[in-house]
Structure formats: C-alpha cells, structure tokens
Image (cartoon, rainbow, N blue to C red; front, side, top):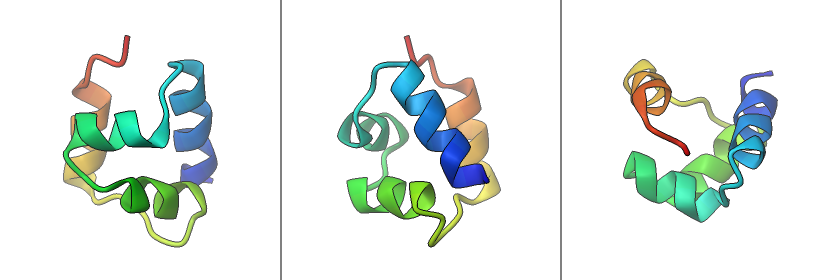
Length: 55
C-alpha cells in the first residue's frame, strides 16, 4: 500500500523515479523497490519526502 501511494503521489507531481530519487538523495532503484513494495522507506526518508517541495 505504501508503494502504490508513493507511485501515485510521484506521478501526480509529474516526477520520474529519477527525479524523486535525486530529490531524496537515494537511488532510482530504491524508489523502484518502494513502489513495487519489495522494500519500504525508513521513517527518516518518509519525513524528508513529506517536507520536500515537490512542485
């Protein structure tokens, strides 16, 4: 469920996985893993994403 929300919000913001990864200082593979629900971001990453200006 978390992964689907990350993908939906990223797409609503008009961002690619690469752009989100750069904004969060992670790899594109990390973002892909989250969206495919193979891994989950840690709480620090969630907080950073929530505080990030995605516009």
